[in-house]
Length: 259
Image 1 (cartoon, rainbow, N blue to C red):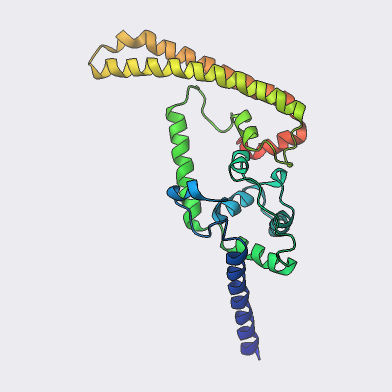
Image 2 (image 1 turned 90 degrees about the vertical axis):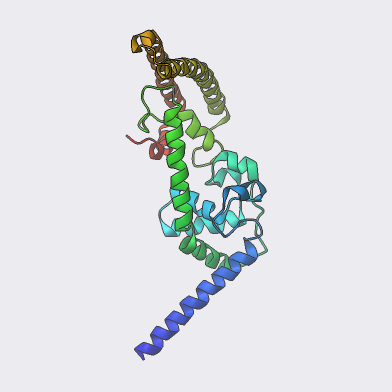
């Protein structure tokens, strides 16, 4: 009897998995690629790969019931404010068309279960982690700041990436103020960054040419002063941004702020 029940259980599980695989191919694969995307695929993609969709969902949610409910709701009632992807991705791909009237609630639940069980793939997660490591390294190499730690996040960048999300809940007045902060910050930092780049190139060239280190001491001091100024701009940006946000909105930022 136990063997029979076990066999029935395994058979049901296999049928469920197979059904989920077929349903996701039929209802989702025309837009969301189900394989791990490569860089050359991105320009022609209609929508984020399913790997990317689940990767971003998992960043914002951990409870399986919450994730399943979100997937099922979004498929029927899609809206930019609900999106888990960065705002620029929503602008790039647009909001997905609703599946209302095109799929049953039961089948949608099976698809959600299949998505949670199979995406993102380990290969995709490894690829994203490598990209993020490279991005961090490049950002550090080109940074005009004295302090480069996640405990001092780039606040307006985080907000821009989540600009239209209902979970952040920015109103128009806040957006106007934040755009002013971002514009002033970016303008000041980019100006400093250009000056630092020129000075660093001159210092490097002098060392390659075999000049005495003391010949570039003044330039080193100038680089330090410029990076200190950029850091002050960064600190002011954080302070100015905090004054615009509510406590709830600051709570949204906490996961990006590694104290």
